[in-house]
Amino acid sequence: MTAPGVGPITAMAVTAAFDDAERFNRSSSAGAYLGLTPRRYESGEISRNGRISKSGDRFARKCLYEAANAILSRKLGGPRLREWAQAIAGRTGPRKAKVALARKLAVTLHAMWCTNTAFREAAMA
Image 1 (tube, helix red, strand yellow):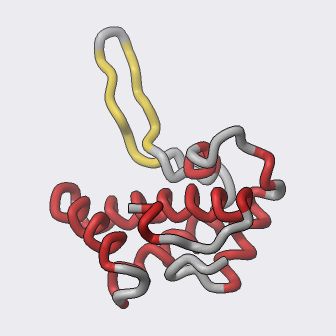
Image 2 (image 1 turned 135 degrees about the horizontal axis):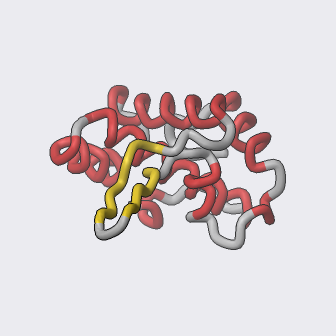
Image 3 (image 1 turned 90 degrees about the horizontal axis):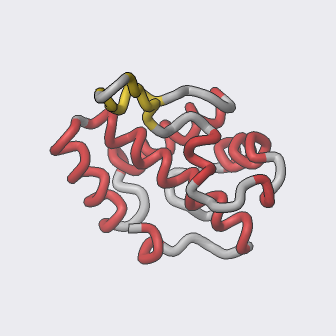
């Protein structure tokens, strides 16, 4: 996989976690499958987002987080992706920005796998 920050170990971990490219109807479900989306808490009239759910493959989630960390700290990938994550970091903090970027990478990697295409930053940001 040719996405920035994603090396052979991360690619194999994500591929092994997804197991089959046809597992999800939409690629946006890939982030939730790996536990990179916020958990919902609802009771009566109160509804709020919590921390990430941490369901799914722990190693793949860790690898994607490290890929996001590499993109933000080592200037890997294109400027649009990094600017998107830095804008989130300015609003919510760097750790939440890395998790958001890891989720975006998971969705993109699944879409790349399903369509058998190379990484395009313009389609991501």
